[in-house]
Image 1: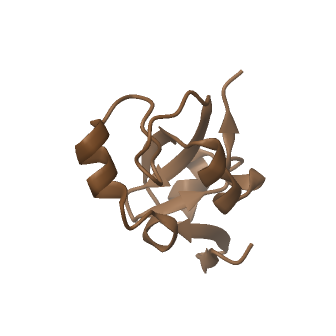
Image 2: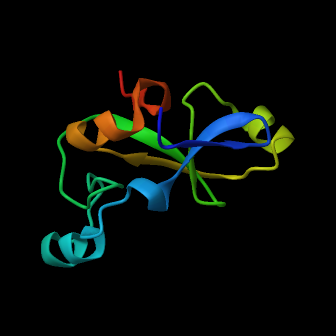
Length: 98
């Protein structure tokens, strides 16, 4: 994936490298809700999420808390992402609600 960088041995995505330049305007216009896309700010009905760290990175879906600590990263939790934005991050970064 072209957006990834290596951080302590794992491939991550810096959120700011993919976040829409209109994110803040979109959130201001539409409001921030539990289903606001974390990348573009639009509302989404999707049940897809990304795992975000305090350091500003999206991390692969298969990374658990123990590995995060080992890599000197701290979780901020999971946030919704719309289907179009999900294409930007790639399947390995997506958590699907079942």
